[in-house]
Amino acid sequence: QVQLVESGGGLVQSGGSLRLSCAASGRMSSINNMGWYRRQAPGQQRELVASITIGGMTMYADFVKGRFTISRDSAKNTLDLQMNSLKPEDTAAYYCYIDMVRGEYWGQGTQVTVSS
Image (cartoon, rainbow, N blue to C red):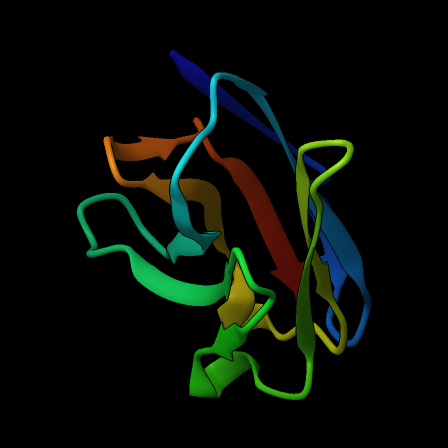
């Protein structure tokens, strides 16, 4: 079983920065990619924020390009999301995931609130 635990969320003013971290534990193998989604309000669809492949190739949603940076530390089994120049519209619950051949695993989420 794989467990993902996010941390680093909180309240920040517009223009500020936060760094989210996702700690993974358990048996991980045949990883396709991992990344971060967000849900801006309950009942809304989750939207992909950023992802990174096992080879290090990154992808960003247009709405975060140039502001967010995804990175992973395979030795520590962590996945980070550095968020700069935060906007009120970045307010959301952020979820990390890992996509492996045997299935997808998700964290419980961490709330990010950006005040104007």
